[in-house]
Length: 496
Image 1 (cartoon, rainbow, N blue to C red):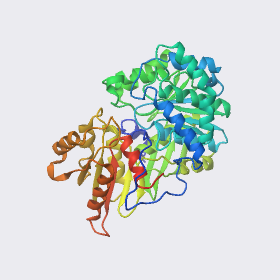
Image 2 (cartoon, rainbow, N blue to C red):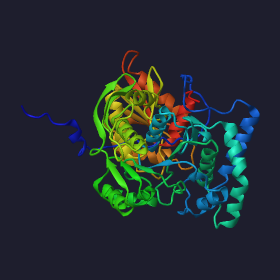
Image 3 (cartoon, helix red, strand yellow):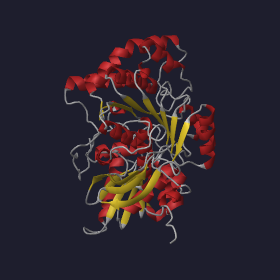
Image 4 (tube, one colour):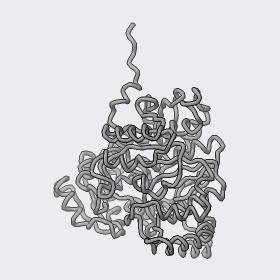
């Protein structure tokens, strides 16, 4: 009797494309005529109900906005290190897990957080950017920090921020201040473990003043090429900076040249590496109502029939990375060979939410939001839509940033969009709608492109086009192209 092939072996050479991190910003509050209403249990907080608290939060936001934004960088950890020094090194008060990569960081961080919380550990999670409120960036026990506590944390460290500002060549940036606030808030809580996502890169990212016992590398692809490099290998050199002496590295499937860079760095610092497709991975997955059913192979063994309420193969791979990360944190694989409690793992994964990641925000017709903003993310999003939604006619709403590979992004969606409505979000980084339309016409042809400069008008136009399929047909809308576009659309559609 011949041996059946192990499906796990097929993982090794499988191509893995992931959707990008969730990164959407606070936007206007206009609402479409077909408002869906805010769902129960929405993980994204709204503005504070207390007018005085809201006023105080806006004052903090205004002060933060007066600093260098996240697109202006001076690659150095000198300023954040100086802030940590005067604060008494709060980032060393707890163990940490550090996450880098191009796509999938925030979803993976949310899964890691859910798993650790299910095992009764108090967690702090730091991710960026945010969906609707800056407070989302700092999470305690699986929920965004309360506005009052956010304000208090800022006021507590403000004198130290000003002290560092005065001593440095450049003032602390917006992201550096928030990173300092997160580390201080985690120490004050106190948390049992911090789950920290890099802002950009690794070596000189402001978060890289921690010595994480577990370093996570999600899929590396081309993005921020003007700052990080023009090839996966060049980008990997910067991202490898999160790998510290003696750490365990959980590495998602990577381009070969990027993997080689990571493995070389691990050898240099005597780190242990677990690779997706070798030491852990996705054994099987099938589409289920509201998500998917997966079987994962972790560092300690197999975990069967896990319901994951997220769409797309990329999220199953993110789940495998998250599971291996938590196993490594608990010493499984290196120090002990066992699986974690199956019921606890299932319960944790079933609770995961990732706003703006193939997120359904309206029905009849169905409107889906996805924060894809680079070609790799677009390919993952297109595959997830095709697999999980039976749309007979899909209308795209795309508002892109000017510094992205817009042509590559649109080409990934061309096979699944019947028509595309190009638009422009409110950010100064937004690509001019006429420039975007010119590229879209080249990719889709003139007859498949609609131009609506205002996002609310673009949503209306797309919904109307989808409704032309008739009441009982399967028309849908996918809003994508920029993290800012998705954030503003989420508010316009009544989420927040």
